[in-house]
Length: 116
Image 1: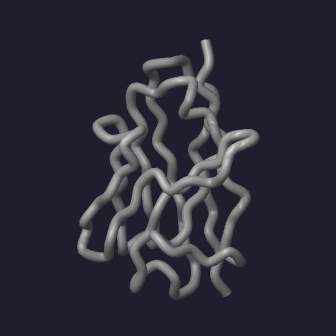
Image 2: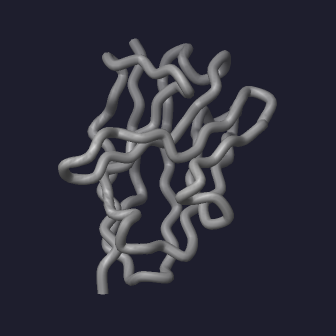
């Protein structure tokens, strides 16, 4: 049984930082690249960062230089360090495999709100 549980979101002022965590249960983590996705109200879900099993990373242009994705294979956890947050980063953040995802494995997500 695969389960993805995201946490770490919250309300932060512009320019602030947050660190998101996603714990994966089941066999999904060890053999897959993982990614962080986000969906803002009225917009499609987008992939913002991904990390391969060899720790190669890819970022969307909108977050490059501000976000850092890492993974801890021993803990089956992927992280997203978000710095210099902007109001346009406000969204519900999810993790899943990347760049192709499993629709049935979407978790509840964690809300990030950037506002003064």
